[in-house]
Length: 595
Ligand code: C2E
Ligand code: MG
Ligand code: MG
Image 1 (tube, rainbow, N blue to C red):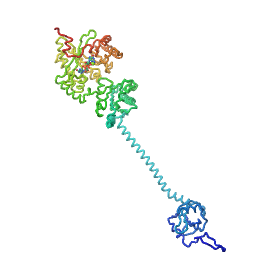
Image 2: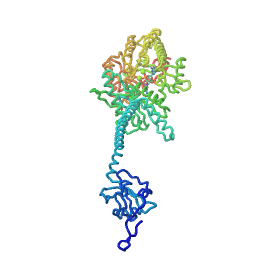
Image 3: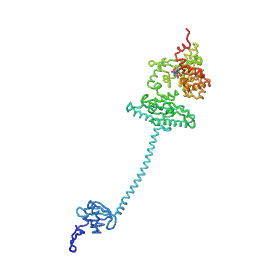
Image 4: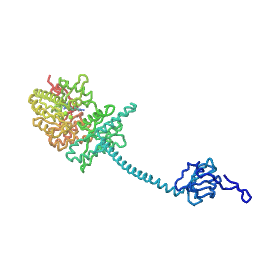
């Protein structure tokens, strides 16, 4: 505690402190102040005077030093413990002081540590871990980048694999599986919503015509380029819509789109998607006349599931192909596998087995004088409950199965017997019978026909065989063989529905036929349609150049008959001259018995 000293008779309050306790005792209450080697201890009294400074507790170095500055006194008063930085007044070394006020004595004890010492310790003690840390961080960073790269590669491979699984390699369009999956999902999503809000959708199948020929003549590379180009055009034509475009395999493409998009796309307008896809193609420096058959079916109207929808679109596409139309919508009537048609097929088989089918005959006349020159036999089926079923409905039920052979045999037998009967009545009249493509491909057909002719004993020139241009073009080589065999038997041959197929001139020249029947689509509105007139005119010229007779089908009025005569067409068939009628009605009209 401060002393009162008597100096030269005066009492003076001393700054000095005399201690009779060991320094250890003085600092004992501040044991939480940790000293580190190189640090020093300072004891300051309440007035800020430095009473003691020592390096080691047992060796005093400096006592009663100068006071500390006022700001430190203030700091110590405010906080019982703390630290401050100062240049030591004793040795001029910048040090950090940690202090603590003794609870029991009027002292502050501070430990000073030179900053340089702290830095040194920090570097030695902290740098090693820091270096370790840095090394670890860079290792982790390196490992991390390696891991990231590996992960990126893995992800890329996975993405690539997922992409490859979902896309067609050649065109980049969706694969069949992905298409079916996505369409099913979209349909499921739409189904679960409010039914009234469900937007109908369309699946469209597009199959290239004569793709095999292109592959065979120009090579597979050209074929591939064609497929890529068609895929690109399809996608471009649907840009901006939510359509799914896929290549299902080979030369078959599929699109799933909103019905409204489909209506626009399928329109024949110059800027419709259809027009944009079916433009000519430049493939390997060859200009390709590109055509496709398109079939489409609507959801939910035609089918409820993806598979069924695709099947319906396929039925429609095949119908378009067989009838050489650019496109066709699905109609249950030509779907031999729709439930209704399967029922009808059963009924048709019954009719075929039990004389339920019959023939009508339509006259072919000479235009110059209206004379009867032959008839065409046309099949008729009057269903017991459904009434008259048109041949374009029931013939497809027989096609693509063995039934077609029995059916054609029935027609041939009935027509031959009728022709024989007429011949015996001294009205030898050539009868024409229509064949299906599958008859032409049946290797036993010619043999069966020959046997029938012999059995009925009809002069071969009284039988004419009609084959459609599209049937002939389906399998040109095989068909040609059968046609030659038929002609060799002495029968007449006609190309039916001429103009709707794509028979090339070169091919036509090889056909061993006697007659071209111009399809009634061109005769229809002959007067009003300039394009039809030109087609008909040039078909007549062409036929004559090949020494073929020409029959115009579907002549419905006198004006058409007159024009045809003018163009040099010799023969015609049509409602204007005669409708298809029973054999009895025909005889009655053309050979009326005198009363
Ligand atoms: P097709 O061989 O071209 O027969 C001509 C069709 O045109 C017949 O239709 C006939 O009734 C119709 N027709 C004739 N003149 C006119 C006319 O002035 N105006 C219109 N609008 N139509 C006319 P049908 O009898 O309905 O036969 C349709 C098609 O069914 C036939 O076309 C033929 O391809 C096929 N067909 C008919 N009978 C048989 C058959 O016994 N066997 C095979 N394979 N096909 C047959
Ligand atoms: Mg015909
Ligand atoms: Mg015809």
